[in-house]
Image (tube, rainbow, N blue to C red; front, side, top):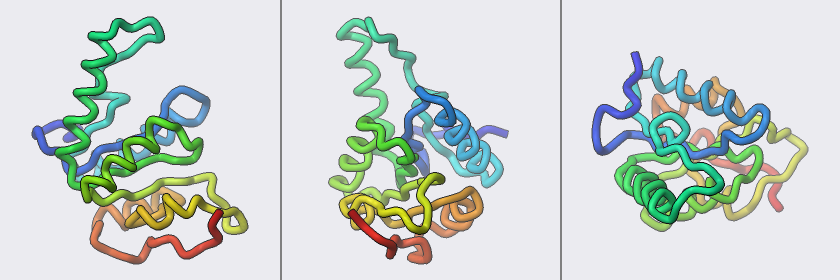
Length: 152
């Protein structure tokens, strides 16, 4: 059962790109996880307005307004940052500025790699796999997944 948009105030805003190989699958895995957990969420990939490269200004304004409205009403932003998509980074900055907790999802982050200090300090959690995402989403107040690794 899908519960992603059962309210004007979704629990989670799922930010992340879906333009390159592997990206849609990461988002789909997180969408399925939240479906299983019964968490309401807004996914621009599934719920947003399709935008083409030659979109009109009206279309662009509609996408911006729709995403911003859902972002502002969310209780948590879960952001896929494996590819450091600029739109996703903008969304997380807006969330942080509005004091909406942010959890970063980075499957490709390896133990020996560094993570951006601004993301590390702004995030409630840095999650590296679906098991961690599940545990955090079940208790988003937990500090268990705060980032303490190497930074850049």
